[in-house]
Length: 253
Image (cartoon, rainbow, N blue to C red):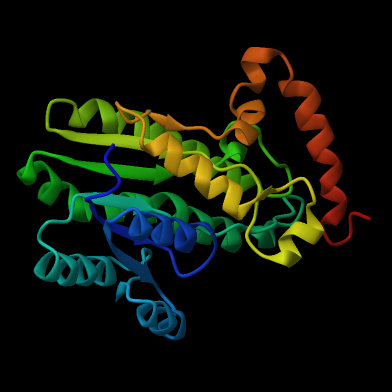
């Protein structure tokens, strides 16, 4: 895809990967609208020159309001990135985890569907555009301390495949961004030294997005071991290794 002349809305871009991708799209020459829930962060990002909009993907009224605001000010919108998401630890031995599971599903899966539904008619009417869904390497190689996160991202993967098939012939393409662990802060890097540095991740992602035609899955090198674990016969061993992290759950030490 041509990343130099786009009008891009990234929901959940007030920090981390989303904000870095917003900066990369803007540096390439695209107009970028950053969406998020926190007014203080949106104000800071607006000071960088970005258009901003408040949005909570768990609230239909908020999503519809953000859509109306964006399309009124940016009728040329042609790219949506569904970055909003939450990661929560859950101990499945404790039924109290259920409220966290519901929060993860409502944000990561249902929130993604709400956002896509809000903008799909506009993109179809234009006859061109791109929807970038965001899943995770954990969708393909579960991280046992975050079971519902893994399930939600696996569901978004399946939804992305179906969405692509249903939009075939409309001019609207669907690309799935599959991040590995990415160190978005020095604290993240300290906790997980194997996490990919944010700058390197974003550079690789933008290079892949530039590919023609746009890949169905945006797979940086660091996530391919997760994506293809079953095919390569490493799945069982890797899940067992990752299960050692269950010790981080309270009461499991």
